[in-house]
Amino acid sequence: MNVRDLLDRARHSGVMIATAESCTGGLVAASITDIPGSSDVFERGFVTYSNVSKVELLKVDSGTIARHGAVSWQVAKAMAEGALRNSEAHIAVSITGVAGPGGTDLKPEGTVCFGLSSVRADTFTETRRFGAVGRESVRAASVQHALALLDSGIAEMLK
Picture 1 (cartoon, rainbow, N blue to C red):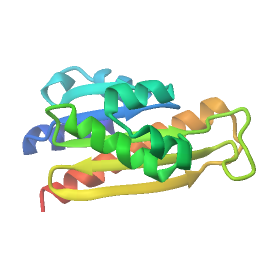
Picture 2: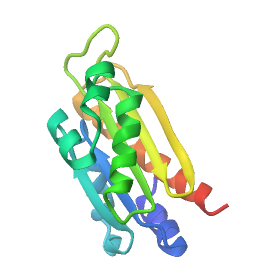
Picture 3: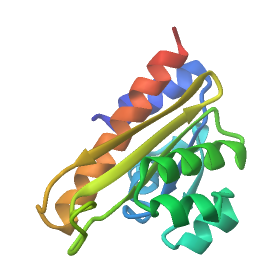
Picture 4: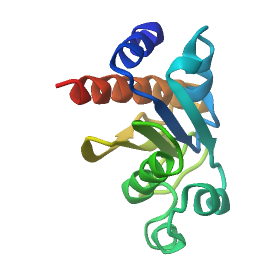
């Protein structure tokens, strides 16, 4: 995913972006803000690594976390919607997952849930299983996938 192209599309369409990240620890926001001029389109990023921060900063319902776990499409959805609601952005992407090492039988290493919320569409969620390829690789794949989701979301907003 070419981040410059993503930012150009957002800039030309007047779309502001927010991120809500857990297992990537702000890497999506960093990849966007590495590009000069990104302040034209990047509104803010939330790094909500702990469950408490998800509740406090994004207003994720603690009951949702208790019922489904932090790594779930339900929490990814709530994170994306919370980032959108608690920012001036038009589109927000969220990531929550098990980068590794570790995991469980139900949520093994490499399980990552994504959310994409925008002012023009229902929230989209997706769970990817990148496999036990190592923490760095899971995080890198998650960043690329989140950027691709933002790109497709911006394209949908322009239709």
